[in-house]
Structures are given as C-alpha cells and as structure tokens.
Length: 70
Image 1 (spheres, rainbow, N blue to C red):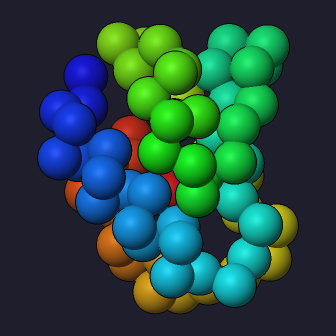
Image 2: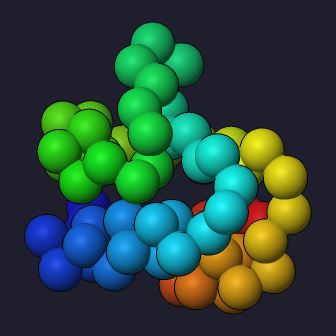
Image 3: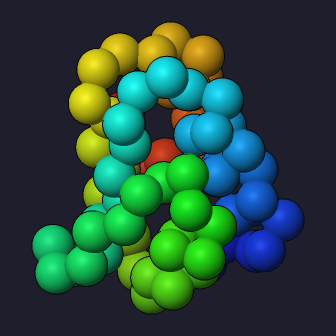
C-alpha cells in the first residue's frame, strides 16, 4: 500500500515527464498518472500497472522504488 506522501512523489515524478503516463487497476480503471485525485481513486492495496507512452529515463529512475518489476 502506498502512503499519501508516496502517491504525491509518484505524481510529481509523472508531472515532470513529457510522456503520457497511465495507471490502471485491475485493467478496469485507467487514470492519468499526473492526476493525484485519479491515482488516489485507485485501489492502492493491490498492484497497479503503469504504462509510459514513450521513454523517460528520469521517470523510470524516480519510480523504481515503488515497482515490483521494471
């Protein structure tokens, strides 16, 4: 489970990226990773999928601490 401060850090990292970044929960709900309300609306007790439309090495490095697999 992510704490609110971790969600904030994740959204801030996404906001710095020029790429479109989606976060999905159970493949049913897809939200913009740059929306803190959208990300907080997901069930963060379960794993979520992050899809980056493009490549951003800095974003990847920033979120590595949250990931189970890269």
